[in-house]
Image (cartoon, rainbow, N blue to C red; front, top):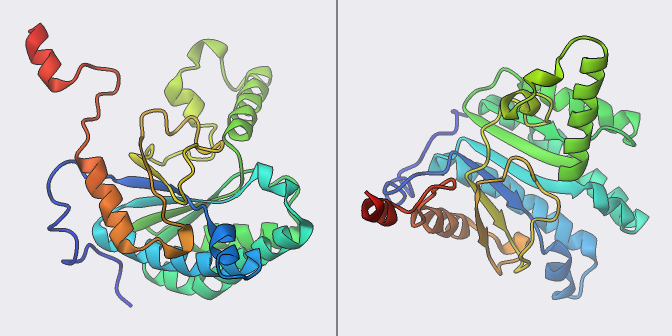
Amino acid sequence: MSALRPSDDFSNDCASGDFPKHIAIIMDGNGRWAKARGRPRVFGHQAGVKTVRQIVEDAAKMGVKCLTLYSFSTENWSRPKAEITALFGLLRKYVQDDLETLNRRNVRVRILGSRVGLKSDMLALLDKVEETTKHNTDFSLNIAFNYGGRDEILRAARAFAQDVEAGKADVGELCDAKFETYLDSIGLPDPDLVIRTSGEKRISNFLLWQAAYAEFVFTDVLWPDFSKHDLHAAIENFQNRERRYGNLASDQSEEVA
């Protein structure tokens, strides 16, 4: 199978305006999708995995270079044990079923989040997927698993403090760029666009540092129903915005001048 490349289906439609290099998605609505069909929540999560597989392919074809998916948060441990077990099982199955294909398509997979509390077999699986794909360069797929934005920042702060104590770093050199080398996302560009499905309008402790200047798109579509057309619409929404990073809008700048 050839490497994933932008297709003709959407690249022309998305040619105007800035194109997001990095898209992050809060995949929400699996449970409600299943409930609406009179099925258990795990049925929705299974459908959600199919959507993950399709959106990874569609995003790469559209020209996105980096995709981060919020899979399991540090707060999700409060869910019923059976649901947690099912979620972990689905991640295992996804990696086992898709790792060879992702590697062949030159996709690099990284896992963002804490490894604390994970069993040895899961740790081995996460290490395997990262090691197998670490030299791939066409597309970056990042799975936020056992992840929380606050937890990530605290872990980074502790790591920096430990380096200071060990004489490996100096407090005076701490700046944004230095601190980012302690984050899970080291080496990744900040997300340009964050999408949340299901109609909820909050970020739920996701990429708190990295998404400081991201554009947000909230859609009522439940994650299992999210399609390439919804992704395309979110990108078009993004392209119709002016990203100012704290500066004045272009028309206001002309007035000041």
